[in-house]
Image (cartoon, rainbow, N blue to C red; front, side, top):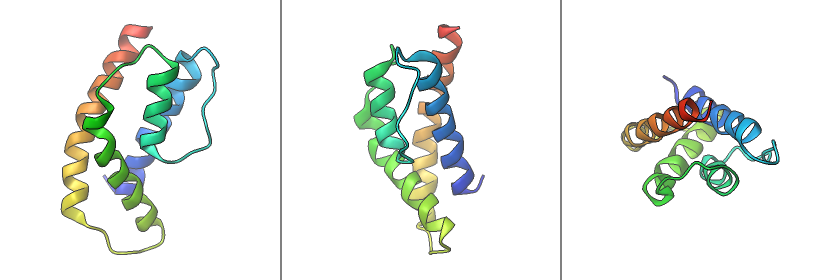
Length: 100
């Protein structure tokens, strides 16, 4: 999956969970995944070790921005970040399943 699409998928999942599971039903306009994760942890019952995912989410965000503007990507860092973020996706999907 191309980095821009992977970033968008995670961003939309964060925003969906913030809209449906937070007491405010809202989210910031940020595209920075680490910021959205912090919002999700602060505003919903979802809990995780954000330090474990912070750098990977930052790499995914930066790669998506660079991909949009046709800059060269650090593919190995991106691949490692996807592996890490896939674990976060599993946690988020589990949270979504338990919350409904």
